Length: 464
Ligand SMILES: Nc1ncnc2c1ncn2[C@@H]1O[C@H](COP(=O)(O)O)[C@@H](OP(=O)(O)O)[C@H]1O
Ligand SMILES: [Mg+2]
Image (cartoon, rainbow, N blue to C red):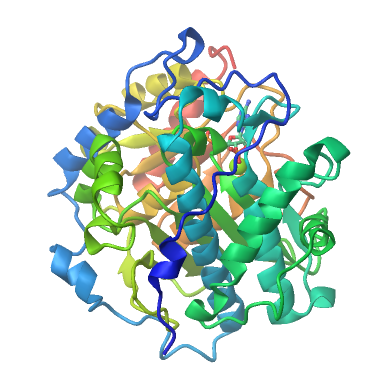
């Protein structure tokens, strides 16, 4: 049986890069920027309090650490291996698992680096969002794994990153770093039951793997959708982020996999998210059980189920379907008991509009603000009941920011639509064309209807 050796815990050299000078990346050793522009209350701590106070209300998690460590959960697909997309799901989960481990190493180094060192490592894209070596490395790794498993001629991928910056002569060191990360990660493929490359990939092969992800999507055929590091801002701040991979067939997402390296199996463990986690990472080996954190969540359309499994650490084996447990959305339907989640950044979704909606339907709890598609995971796992995103007028949502999450929430029993009540349309290319105002995901139909009607009542008087 393949096992995880402590070799994987060997340090990945730190690897974030400067793409331009426009990103105001004053990274601290803590998740929230301390500069004026980013000064805010520590929302993650707020999230932790909320989660802790809710942990007895609706806890679908395993009750003890032993339960997690013993991995005595269901093996969800053992009787379903002949189902459609079973191989796709297996490969996708394994690829995301590898990507999570790659990202964890990069983030660990990032949060332990000095301000100055970090300033050199984070770059800004044209839209001012940050990018790191992890984005390209994950894209190359996932692209390579999918191509090996299904044949590159059969694999079409829509993904967030391209090779423009990496291909520049001035990016030679960056590219070297990406190649190194990719090879370190792929060398561990056998631990997941996948084949490693017969020799390390060279620069050209890594660039090819990244640039192969040039599909523009569309309404027919099959394509994968990858966000290599969703919530890059959360990632560089040492906070939540996700690796999101979905398979779309004829315009419909059929598989969704979310790697959430900082989203633990047990809600209570999230309290270790910030200070304790950093402390723990210095005091214990990353292979230690005490350090185990993070999860991979997945679903297959039509199965009516969604699953969550812990990220592998130490010598744990990954033998598909490994031990996963089924997750379900919250059963709370009373708005007074419900919690909504939304982006941390108010630039990405109007906090004032969602606060008004929440108030008008009778939701009284503080919002749970999380970076990335971890919000979809939070709904699917029952940590919150509602997710709302209302971007500024003119912003076009991209399919890779939602596809995996939709399959997972629906599998867990929830509902996801635009603010007009229509399903999200993944068949129109890289954008969610025709999206009506915003995105609303709910644990149950009752809450969903209430929020849709609150949007109707308040939209015209909003400034959106
Ligand atoms: N002005 C904007 N409005 C809405 N969403 C935006 C945005 N700018 C970026 N985003 C998207 O929001 C994602 C982060 O989600 P969240 O705000 O929920 O953490 C980003 O993903 P990336 O980090 O992968 O670029 C990006 O796609
Ligand atoms: Mg994204």
